[in-house]
Structures are given as structure tokens and as C-alpha cells.
Length: 343
Ligand SMILES: Cc1cc2nc3c(=O)[nH]c(=O)nc-3n(C[C@H](O)[C@H](O)[C@H](O)COP(=O)(O)O)c2cc1C
Image 1 (cartoon, rainbow, N blue to C red):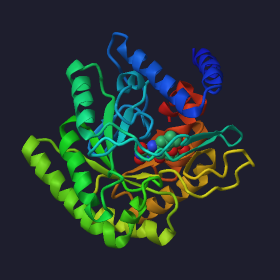
Image 2 (cartoon, rainbow, N blue to C red; image 1 turned 90 degrees about the vertical axis):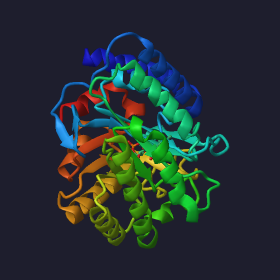
Image 3 (cartoon, rainbow, N blue to C red; image 1 turned 60 degrees about the horizontal axis):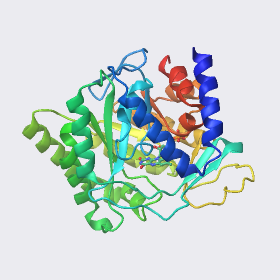
């Protein structure tokens, strides 16, 4: 069964990889949306349960943000067995993202480079889609994270307002929220991770979280997603702020702007964030630093270059409590979810 699944995906992938990357992304997402329309309730693959952020994860493997930016294929993704699915990044207002081409395959490196730039339909549209998913009630135990960001045109000084607007719009629909301060494709976004910017931002976020929890009678955890391109001292500063403001989790990491040891592939020089196999050592290093600095006080979701069970196990050994995948899922398909669910 697992072999058949891998062979079927290998065939689908060989067809999808003949198309330009963003076209095959759209075709793949349409396929997943159709898969979600088939009748039946949708459950995570069985695995070892974990309690993280006060939630029960039926297996440790989640879909990382950016694949289903507008929550169009949540039910299809749930059918594949993910323990959790993170949708977004969503911004307060819809925006088109960067001009195409903005997504590149590097098959020799088992990697991708993207500079999508938060193309999405906006937080209100996201809330309506999630409303529909909740109303259909077909998800059984698959947890839903919503990753939020700022619009490109919002000045950095007002970035916090964008995060708060997104929180207001999607709070009641999410099992957890993620603050994305680490996309390399929105100018200046990563500077929000700096010591001076982080504390005032987290203070406002925690204040709003408390207010929303009181209003709606439900506490929705908030995670912070960070970059792999941070010096050890910066990771320590972020860990300190996360612990002080009692954030619920850290997600490490986003894509890298570095280009570690790439084969001389045609697209290696494209601007954007690199993901997949070459990112793994950087992501593992950041997770290790976080683990050391946090000492288990705040859980860590490890993401970056997990391409097989061994990579997932290494991430857990390094201190991650849960895993997320994006590029590995593109290259390996649902077989990778199976390999990781059992860890
Ligand atoms: C095409 C593409 C789009 C992405 N978009 C987002 C995004 O909108 N928000 C986000 O937080 N991360 C985004 N990411 C980053 C992934 O969630 C993940 O952190 C990163 O790719 C590292 O994991 P991987 O090596 O398994 O792909 C994107 C990644 C890719 C490849």
C-alpha cells in the first residue's frame, strides 16, 4: 500500500514537474481540493500522540505554511493524514504578491526557491473559508493553524496593526495562530525579529490574545515563526522574548536567503527563500539553539529540509516537539507523511 502510494505519487510528480512550478502548484492544489470533496470524515494518520500548546496532536507531522495560502484544500490535505495543517500566510487585505516567475525548482538539490510575496485573498476571505470547513464538520482531530502576516504596503511602524487585524478576523476559526516575522519576500519583515521591535510587538499581540480569549471564551495559542538566517546571539534574544511574553510555541524555520552548497543549477541564483534539503543543517542548528535557550519552557515546531524519516528523527532529537514539511512533501508526496507520522 505504502509502495503503491509512493509509485502513484512518483508518476503524478513526473507529470506535474513538466509544467512550470507555479502552474503545477495550482494543478496540485486543485487536485487536493477535489480530493477533499469526496465524502467521508477526515482523520490524521495514527501515530504517537503529543500534547503541545495545550492541544492534542494525533501525529507529529504538519503541513508548513505557504502551500495552501487561502485554505482552499484543507479537507484534501486532512485526507492525506497530516496531524495538523497550517494555512496562510494571510494578510489583512488581499494582495497579488510578486510578479511571476516567482517559484523555481532545483531538483538536483531537492530544493525550491520562492519569492511569492504573500499572494493571498485576505483575512476576511480566509475567515469565510474556515467558517465553511467548520460548518461541514468533517475534520476529526486534524488541527488547523492560521499563519498571519502584514501587507506589503503597510509601513513597518504599523506592522503590529496588521497582525492584530488578522488575529481578530480568524481567531475563532483557528486551533492556533502563527506570527510570520520571517518571510524574506516582504521587504523589512525580518527586522521585526530584532530586539527593539520584538518586545513591543509581542506585548500587543499577547494583550489582544487575552482580550480575544476573554471575549470568545477560548484561548487560542500563538506561535512565532523565525528565520534560519539569525546569529546565535539573535536566536537567544528571541528565545528570551518568547519566554518572557509566554508565547505558546516557536516555529523554526522559514526559508533561507543563503545559498549553502547548491549544485550549479540554472535557478540557484534566483532571489528569494531557499527551502528543502540544503536548508536542513541551518534549521537543525536554530532548533538546537532554541532548545538550549528555552530548556523546554516553550515548545518548538521544527521545519526546514525534512525529506525523510531520518531527517524528521534528527529534528526531534535536536529538540523539536512537532514537525512541519513543505518542500519534502512536494518531492516525496504523501509517503513522507506516513514516514514521519510514526516517529
Ligand atoms: C513556495 C513556498 C511558499 C511559502 N510561503 C510561506 C508563507 O506564506 N508563510 C510562511 O510562514 N512560510 C512560507 N514558506 C516556508 C515554509 O512554510 C517552510 O518554513 C520552509 O519552506 C522550510 O520548510 P521545507 O524545507 O520543508 O520547505 C513557503 C515555502 C515555499 C517553498
